[in-house]
Length: 166
Ligand code: HEM
Ligand code: HEM
Image (cartoon, rainbow, N blue to C red; front, side, top):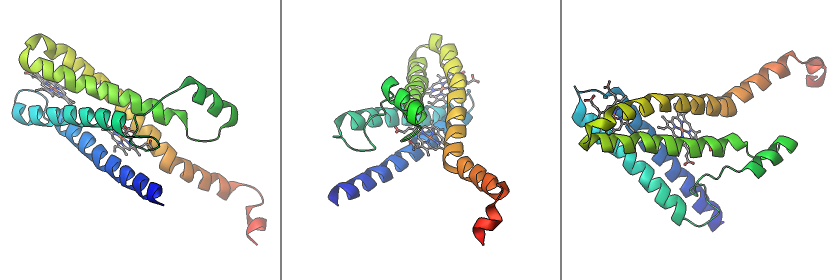
């Protein structure tokens, strides 16, 4: 029971952390450029802090917890491909890729803060990270909403549905 409650608390913390990360990233992205540099800097460092907190928490918190760092594994992917059961391996893969890419964006930004040479690489990594984020949003939307929606449509058009309903 206590374990269940802890896990729920950890999930809530993970959601709050996600809002912090995604919100700060959005602000940093829309304020990129010279006009709103102070806000860009503040939001960018908030992203960097979010990643640091996540990595430290993920390493310190004992298993099992949703706050443990994502752990993509080739073996889990192979097992999932063979059985199609359990958690989709792309969840862990996306989570690890996002933490790394968003960490690189914010890290290169911090370097660009003192060394102008880093400005171009920072901008390039920031633009590239949008593809990973778009893939992530498309994937979670499909897994949590799109799949249910598709099932409803296929159930509705499946032959014999009316007989079953009667
Ligand atoms: C993770 C969040 C971040 C995102 C999405 C992001 C995105 C961007 C983008 C797209 C640019 C290019 C702007 C342009 O020239 O049109 C840029 C520039 C820049 N960013 Fe960031 N950045 C982030 C974090 C940071 C951080 C933490 C810093 C540290 C202060 C930083 C410092 C800079 C600097 C110095 C430039 C060059 C500004 C200029 O062109 O004069 N960024 N950023
Ligand atoms: C509307 C936009 C977004 C939605 C709906 C969304 C939704 C989600 C969901 C549902 C998860 C949990 C997936 C699971 O069950 O494992 C997740 C995880 C994650 N998201 Fe997003 N997300 C969005 C935007 C973003 C953005 C902009 C970023 C990065 C700047 C981001 C970074 C992450 C990371 C790093 C994780 C993994 C968390 C962890 O386990 O460490 N997300 N997202």
